[in-house]
Length: 167
Image: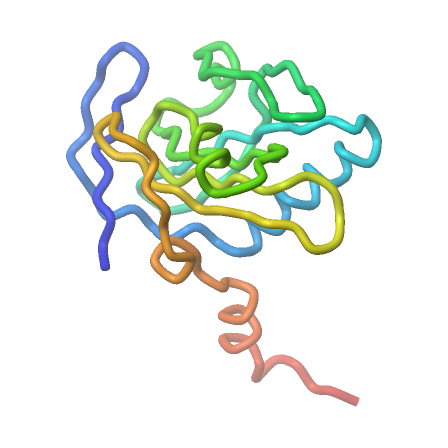
């Protein structure tokens, strides 16, 4: 399955559609760890914008300017939050913690821009998380993790197993 994105850069610059690389599980785990730490310290939810370097397929996540509370982060995309990044970097999703009780409440937290959006309940232990896709400004559609995520941790161990010698 290939997801095609047709991102728009600030100023209305258009790009040709390209297959959206799957999101690395290591970045999702890192994003969750950042959000968990913030929850432990501030008892507030937060958001990270998922960014993509399209020529390499490398994903990264950075926090946008936001107002954080116990229920959800309040934010929007602002060009100034990304002005220090190279111009080819594209916004392609978000990771947010939100006190969403069900999939419908989680869908209401998804930002209105195209990409992969992950919503996770705050705090530790067992909690729910959802993955949504948005396309062409449409509604948030629930996505299956296998279609969107790649287990790069397992892939790395498999690829470099010949370099590891257990004692």
